[in-house]
Structure formats: C-alpha cells, structure tokens
Image (cartoon, rainbow, N blue to C red):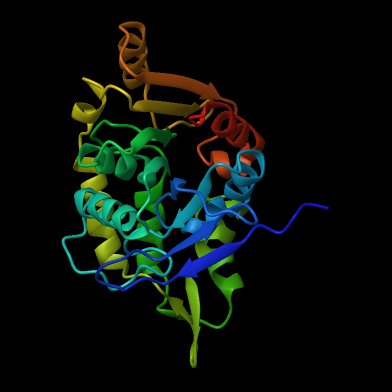
Length: 284
C-alpha cells in the first residue's frame, strides 16, 4: 500500500496569494517545487493524481497544485484579468512559498501562463513545461470559447449538477468535459450556481488568444529549459509552431519538443505518459 503523502491547502489572501495545495513526501519539506497550472475552467485538483505520482517517484521535489485567478478557490482577484496578471499571480505565489528552485508545468491556458511567468521569473526557475499549449497568438481548436459561450446561455441556477452535465454533452462535448465543467458549480441555499465570474473569464480567454509569447522561447535563457509536449491528436499547437520549436532545438537553444500520444486533455487521456515524462526529465 502506498504511503500517504502529506498535503496542505491554502485558500490564500484573495488579493495577494493564489489558492493552492502542496504535496510532499512524508517526513521532508523540500525546497524544490513543481507548480502545476491547470487549463481554462479547471482547477489545481485536476493535476492531483499526476502530482502525487511525481512526489512518489521523485521525493526530492514537492508539488504545488495552483488555482489560477478566477478559477477554483482563487476568486475575487482585482482586474486586469489577463495572462500577464495571471503570470504575476504565479510569481507572487512562488515568492510567498519562499522556494529556492522551481519548475512550472502548465496545461493549455496554464501553459501560456507558465511562459508568461517565465518572462519575469528569477534564476530559481529551472524548467517550464508547456503541456499542449502554444506561444502563438490566435484562437485554438480546444473549444474553450465555445464552452464558455454555452455556460453564459445556461440558467444562473440549477437543482442538481447533472443538469449541467446533460446540457454540456448536448452541445457536443464529451462526458469527461461535461463532468469536469460541473465541478465549477457550488451549492447555495437556492440550488447550484457557478462559482466563477463568467464575464471576467471571457476577458481572460480573449487575452489568451491575443498574447504572443515567442519572445520567451527565442532566445532561450541559459540554464532554463522549456519543454513543449504536443498531443498527438487534437493539439492546440499547429504544425508551423511545432516546426519552429524543432528548428530552435536543432540550433542548440534550451528548448525541446516532445510528441505524446493522446488528445488535448492529456492529464485525463494519458496521465501515465505525462507522469513518465515529468519524472524522467525533472532536474536531478
């Protein structure tokens, strides 16, 4: 039977520290931490299983499951609601945790936030993992804008979570996305309501589409590796961006592109593959 991994959760001071949950090996509090940044409409808990796997395989590293601004328990943060502000939140969290060495691993929306955080990070940032995301500006095929528009059309309250699951599936999304979307509901005295500010999320998503972060990738920072993981099916990253990263890698920049079997939701479709990559490539 696997040993229980110690965890601690902070809901944060709303205007200062993002809500987060830390996982580390029993009997040790490391000074090296992997910060996991989830995708749009997600939360840190989406990466809990992979985070625990990292700590079990590499107890020299701890894991921080972050709720990005306007997501999970990180509600009520002041505008502007942008990728840059999200990145500043992440860097502020790193300072709050007083860690000496970090890796930031971001999926989808979180991948672009990870790149933006690297733009202003100090020398303690050793790696940036961009998990099926892109440095490029422009709309993607992940469907976040379609899903958010659907949620804005739904009622403000529901009698049960299953109503949302049914509505999201009826709009053409699979059951996994539908059930994950329903986790953004919170129970109130009159039923279930969204915990999120949907209008503010729309501003955040539009900024994600506008943001171009190639300047973080080229030229690379000596001693800091940027690892892009591209899903083999339904990737956000287009072929032109993948080729550009491949050329940078061939030219000796501290950039790497890895193709991984699975669709865009790699943490659900191929968690073992994601975990294996992280365990193998984390700094020793």
